[in-house]
Amino acid sequence: MISELSTPVGEGHPGILDIPTAERLVNLSPAELIEHALRNGEGTLTDTGALMVDTGKFTGRSPKDRYIVRDANTADTVWWGDINRPIEPEKFWGLYHKMVAFLADKRVYVRDAYAGAHPDYHLNIRVYNTLAWHNLFCNTMFLRPTPGEQVGFRPEFTILCVPEFKANPAEDGTQAENFAILNLTDNIILIGGTAYSGEMKKGIFSVLNFKLPVERHTLSMHASANVGTGPDGLADTAIFFGLSGTGKTTLSADPSRCLIGDDEHGWASEGVFNFEGGCYAKVIDLSEEKEPDIFRAVRFGAVVENTRFLPGTRTVNYADKSKTENTRVAYPIHFIDNALEPSVGSVPRNIFFLTADAFGVLPPISRLTPGQAMYYFISGYTAKVAGTEVGVTEPKATFSPCFGEAFMPLHPTRYAEMLGEKMTEHETRVWLINTGWTGGAYGTGERIKLRYTRAMITAALRGELDAVPYENHPIFGIAVPQQCPGVPAELLNPRGTWADEAAYDEKARHVARLFREHFAEFEAFASEEIRAGGPIA
Image (cartoon, rainbow, N blue to C red; front, side, top):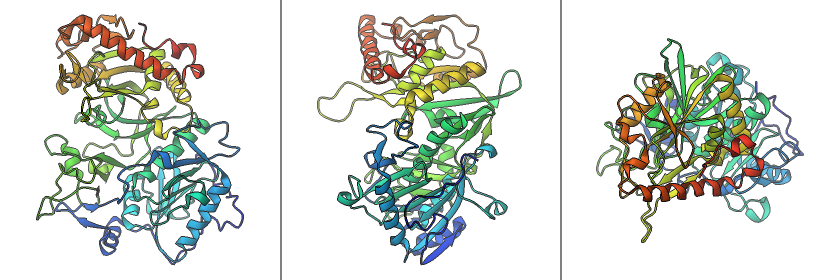
């Protein structure tokens, strides 16, 4: 187990194993929870049987309203700042007691679940929900104990998720009525004032991002993973890191390989394991042609958030973004035909950092040294296309350390150094994949074709790039293969795809400056090997 349940220290605390409620419904089946949700007016069934719900005011997480209790355990460990905001223990316990009192006359749905598919890394979770569909979401996204495992189940972490309860900022130490607070010492998460279900999922992810590296020397990763058979006949696990829009879900969904998971994983000495029991996928503009696995997973037992119907039907209109562009579906991982259960893989042989570089300057594939891998991991770079504001024509660089800054309680260099240690120990290869533009920036060049990106990843997995010649990029210093099966040679060197090579050099140096400016925040904490991994010109 990751940790033993600690005794809460709040004075007069009733104990997190015994929260008094008017009615307690424990571990209901998905069908029962759907019945309750429909009876409570929480949602509507689609024509495929999925439950459609609306999350209200909040259609995504609220990062500015997420807090971590600052105490002796976290004061010198957590990377405090805009991402990890501190709240004092007395404020936490004050809110806790208010929430417990609020629940005293309520019907509450209780769910026992766990995170961590590897049996040596289970984190037992108990969730208290006032919404039936929230409890269904937890049953979908967390791992599900067997009936035998439910007997004598002992939670190590408790979540209270009560959307109807709102904080009093002047009294409770929050900046708004909504909040998500992590107590990493007493093992409780409080969520109030928001019905966005992802706060529960990402709350536990943040917990694991703290506990696994600190207590188990296990790297937690915001990444997808799949596994196939390598050229030597042995298991070949691959990890895919990438921010939204870079192709993380698409490229890890390979019909010739088994899906380990699409979002959250740990890398222990034994190998890679999924934290979750489900997938939480965006569905904006979803179609069976583009994403057949996800499209077919929207069925009975799945939860669709903030979508709308085609007029006069129960058919989801996936193009409708009137509520939000962050429309999503949560479904159990076994809804995917080639999902691996249990979701446990071998030590990864290949890691792919995905970036959709809208500036069009990064090579479509390059091989990274350990130092470069740590540097680009801390950077977590992608570049989005120009926005819709008048006069905005330049792509916008986005940096998210560790490809998941919002969920990382520790300093990014802590995760990066662990990545470097593991890739060196296991001789894991790390590749930087540009799924963005070539021949010029967005508006001038064109998007790199998906079939070429797939061919490059396949070649890397098969070891077909091990013996080809490489050249180091003159500005970024990364090793660029000069040959790749199924890919035109001229595509591999981005400078040659631009009509004006001098313009390419200028734009590449501009992007290199953006990297250096972002990295300046971390430079004092980074090793010499990491500092040397950045652009060279």
